[in-house]
Every structure is written in structure tokens, then in C-alpha cells.
Length: 142
Picture 1: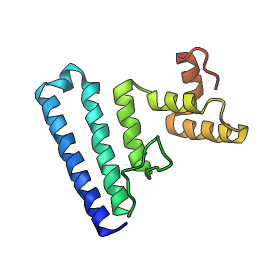
Picture 2 (picture 1 turned 135 degrees about the vertical axis):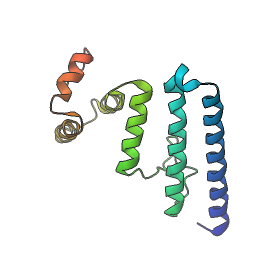
Picture 3 (picture 1 turned 180 degrees about the vertical axis):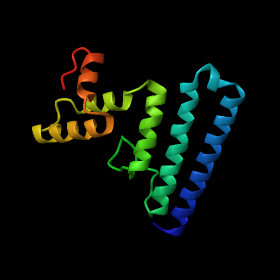
Picture 4 (picture 1 turned 120 degrees about the vertical axis):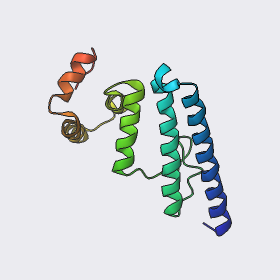
């Protein structure tokens, strides 16, 4: 990446951060946190995206084209994934990130990967995670 592109991306990060902070201030002023807390939590997701972009630029990667519509992806370390999991659970309810992960991978896993995923889920959410999901989601097959 050349210096000009690096400067452009830094300016973009600065503007994204400014916009996120202004949005938070407006929503906070409207007492959105007490009126619909989950809506305010979306600003946390926006802020985290800005942080991810900072990390990407710091690693010399152009983050601007990274999205689900192309082949580019950003790097998300465990601390970033943990924060995103926490925010999604706060916005959509307990267990949402887990339910989303299971629904998007259902039927697409090899038996070996399914066993590995179950072990990961049990390590994260407890040994009875599959039983709790089955009880809370009729039709779910662990």
C-alpha cells in the first residue's frame, strides 16, 4: 500500500470514528439507552468496526473493500470476537451468537468438524449447551 492510500484510509477511519461518536452522543441525548438499550448498543458495533479498521491499517491491510460482497475479509482476533459476541447477545438476547453460528453452519459440517464445534461450544457455554439449545428451540438437532 502506498503512502497516499494509507493517508486516505487514515482519514476515512477518522471520519468513521467522528460519525460514530456523534451518533452515540445524539442517541444518548435522546435517552435511547433507557428507552431501547439494544438500539444504542448498535453504536458499539459501529465503534468496534472502526477499531478493526484501525487494526487492519496498522497491519498494512486495506480494509475498505472487506465485506460480505467480495473476497476480502478483516482479521478478527479472539478479543474482537468476544466483544462482538457480547454485543450481539446484548442486542438480540442471550445465546444469539451461538444460535446464529449453529443455524448458518447447520448441514454444512463434516462429522469431524461437527464434533470439534460441539467441543468448542461446550467449552464456551458449558457441557449442557446442546441440551439447553434443544429445549429452547424446538426442532433444533444437536
